Length: 355
Image (cartoon, rainbow, N blue to C red; front, side, top):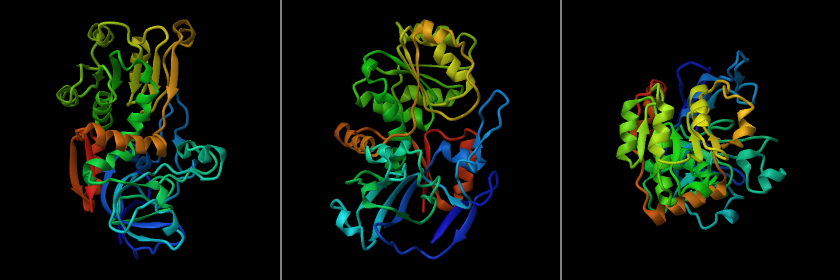
């Protein structure tokens, strides 16, 4: 079995060969068919997050991320074998089925996990590709069949991003579902932004004005059906947003999450509006605190999504025949190159590793 691991933060991934594991207990062994390269992988690779305002960066090591670690939380794999205790809980899955891996695991025992929100577990997060080894490999194990969602014919390469960028944007859109009949504003026209556009249309939304500082990404967003696009660096970006919305802006989804995007997002909202922050680019908030009650603004964080939402998402993709976002396929051996291209902003859509 071959994998590419973070052996040291801020260092090239290390190619490792080790025996292919035998699934034990309730585990399932998968042969990886596709592994998406996510912006969150950059933070894991770099070892932390910028908190802004001169604060000490948030260290992933302090949060329990140990090295070496095989990243990859957007994974599709073919079932190779079940552990002896997994066969009673397969849910109809069988050897040879191609499945999307739900990666956002928790302790599985606390009230939050039992309630179906393992992605929000604070007792012992066990996310695959973050706290446990993930899909930057040719094989991987998953703790239980319940975390495997049958693709039923969906393309493995274009489906892999649904495990993160898909369910992340779907969950964020659900948080503003009551105002989707009006134009919303979305910051970031990369892989998540293009995913959000396609899901917004499938959910019956009016559409979105996309904000990005990269002209290529703005063009891609407009080609994907955005109502309009705005350069976030433009001196009159706020005025452009208000003009292109043609009315009050009631919802902003920030897929970037830095000081500039959150400020512009906050400023463009009407009274009673909601700012949903998804992106982890980093920095500190700059908006004036008195304006939060004066404008009655809701600021809400959104962290990936739960298993139920992931299944809802796949059902929506099938029923609405949602077109996939653009993907660039790269062999597993080019995992380092994929991360570097993402870091430099060279990618439009998503890079997907194919072992």
